[in-house]
Image (cartoon, rainbow, N blue to C red; front, side):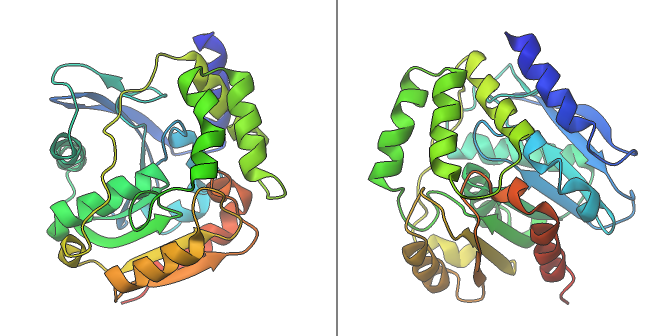
Length: 279
């Protein structure tokens, strides 16, 4: 069963630029798989996926982003993908921040742009509070548990695929959430087949205190999916604008929560690049 998952994963990896390098970085919590592409002397950009998404969710965005940046995309430790959790258990927010510290240390970059989607957006925002001197610019793509809670309806629909995960249940859930919005079918297959892997062990998110968000020094871009069923984006937009007054908050037309990185990858990449190019 795992063979089918990794075969689907490799299909998406072949979409990356020809210069892509894949390697593992050690940390006290295990080995983190990283896919890197772009000029080595270009500004670094760390991409953090959502839970169950793996680094393959960036496959269609890697090429346009790598034209002007050194892109580093990680598989979450303790989640689906090629990263391997071993050694010290990663249980707390402090552990997760230490893990990201170790990743950035091993990449040998003093600071980096950081972009996260969904749960990865929560990790990215938490890291910008933890180490503001190491985050040049921050991009949050329909982030969860950062500004408001998730929709009870969304959580109820997700429950079967969380309690009794199977490819069929995950496909059904993702079809419901992305209905009517563009999404890459090959990536959907990776996300569905991830249900056959051992249950993930990731740090549960804790919504930041609005006062703590004042530690975010980096200019931020918050892009919300117009058709997100994960949360009420009007409430997210209001809370994000209030908590991060210097942030740019915008809506991506037609996008769903889970389909956001793959639905219009070149358009989304251009919006990110325009933001990153600002002085």
